[in-house]
Image (cartoon, rainbow, N blue to C red; front, side, top):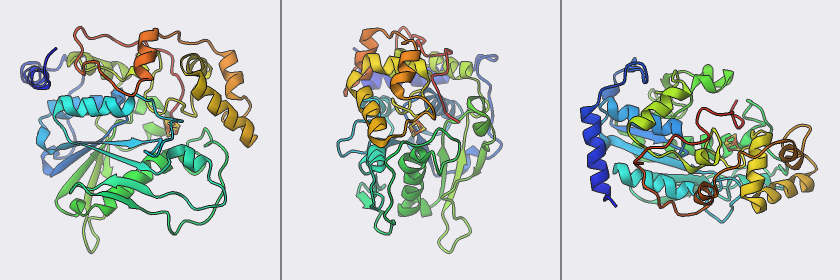
Length: 352
Ligand code: SF4
């Protein structure tokens, strides 16, 4: 098996030696000065769109020494296993290792499940690793007692679809605001939303000041936000993955078109049928919460009814096992590269 350094050397020679296949991936030159930043923070769920962002940035010449990966653990790190794919932590670690990039984790304590079970109490703190390596736990102390005990709503409104805000958006902002290193120099935050995914995402700006930006404040914090693949089609995303033989997250090999939460509230019937097949215990926990709360995720159908109406993507048991394993042991650069079952297939559900 090749060493990491061999893999990386191979990757870098590919970057140096290959030009864009003109029709496959557009040059999509940024409308701002990409050299203007001191650090480039790529937020990744481990999915294809953030992977395409990384490859595209490297193609555009962003120095690897200035790039860092950030991953939000949607289950936190206190023992919940309700939402994340078991393999995701290990997969993003392997990806960072293969590219030689630093990787930072951040999370809401007790994850989405903790917030889901909130009953007449404040929200939990968030946890992140500061640039100097210190693990910081903060927030929650001034939060008013409240009760959730129902799943987030399938809506574009983040107030009712609270999972994204609680487990990702707020966590990112708090980290950016509270790590003093972000008051030094300029930071570019990068995320992989694409216009093609939904009418809501189509309205996102390609480039704008980040919500944590405070460039005109007394203690200025300059943070811009770039969505480099916003105009890309799914085909173009898979084209750049193929070009560099970068392995896709195992969720795509299971047959899903997205790799984020494995029990995403937006999953459709076929995806729920698949989840019931490959992870009956995890599926049963979601179903049991719906019964306990007396409210289903879908407005009119329980996850059991959804799975009953759907047809499983019938994943190869090998890939189901890889996705449900805590250790990702396959190569990050795939030879031969394989287009996963979930690529260019049915939308498994979400986002809005
Ligand atoms: S992937 Fe789905 S369940 Fe997870 S935070 Fe996003 S919308 Fe919520």
